Image 1 (cartoon, rainbow, N blue to C red):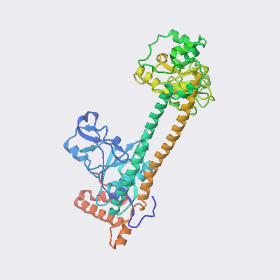
Image 2: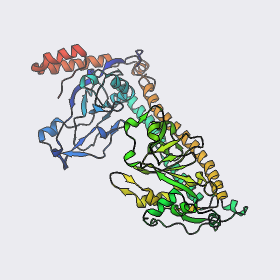
Image 3: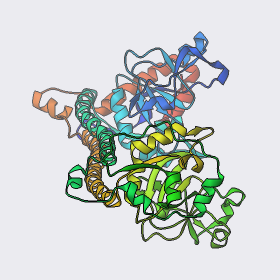
Image 4: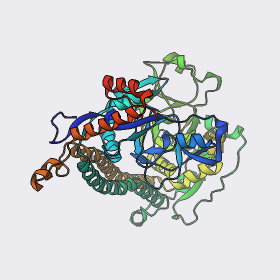
Length: 521
């Protein structure tokens, strides 16, 4: 906050314009009820306003209901939260249902003759994060602020008439910003649907319909018959395991005549899929002490995304531990599928990837490159054709999971290898464009966030609307400066103290010491 203030403004502490502050109400779980008084929690303060969702209700006595009620114009400040969120605030609007506030919030009741509540809230939005980050206390992962710390918050105070003009202008500008942001926020969902439409077209043969008319290729069924049967470890595992039957999702019927449909089990037996295996290491599963600063990358679902595998973020499993694990050793080119907890993300290990070992939440598919293209299979697994199969067999216990045994019965739609590569190339091109658009949208959304702060910074520099000093000079009239406004508030406080002599000495001492502490009501 700059010390160079517009004419008639003053740098103040919050406590100088506060009538009272009060911490919220704590009640045991037994006091919550389906019917009762609505209680605003820290979750109900969002983006500078009150969000009326997931409202909890309490059984309260009439005295409690009056003591902790929230009135229009009250400022509700969150006093306990993460360090990033503590201090968020909202003004109680007109027309809100009678409600109270819980203990992680503070009710700040302002002198309405000194400050417009929305002006105070905007000041907190602009500078409160820095103030509370510096001054909050950190305890067991949570941060907390106190009434004196709120009262000590410094901000520039404009004359009251100017505050109201500033608020009116800020809200008009932010409405435009929020409309633009709302449109931008819808674009990622549109792009997600667009990508699924592209995948659906690719997996139905629509992307390459013209291409097929110019090519003479062997059908995929004939191609598979020409692949030698394999006696692989994966085939032997499948032969030993009981199977669960094909998923309830029916495969499409109107595929191009050169395409075919095969299950994972059939493709393993035929040699198109050389191996597929998860990282279920059983009793040998690594412990925390098995990880270090060097070794073999250990991939979990946290590192697998539909467009990338975050190898650099995977922890190192010590080499001596890695040598004891016989399964889950992934290689460059393997298609990775998350199947536990986070189900359905697909990635391909880059050709330059170092040796990796999978955790229990990831399955690798090792493909015969003469039969299956890894990029095509990865796109197929991202499509609704595969994802719907995952959903139909997903076990929902403590967390979602789809076992390797169930994956063996999933089916894939398969064009000939040449067409697989052509489909993957075309999807690559379209997704590259979609990713570029998404990147620009992300940048634009970030700019709207910055624009909000820029509007507030301009407002509190006295540059958004004509100042009261400028208008008074132009109109040949006097006006009440912020300093005069504060003097008036002090006289009101002194008069109130005189009427309550039992509290006068304590309240007066606090004001002289900090100009910030205020009596709780």
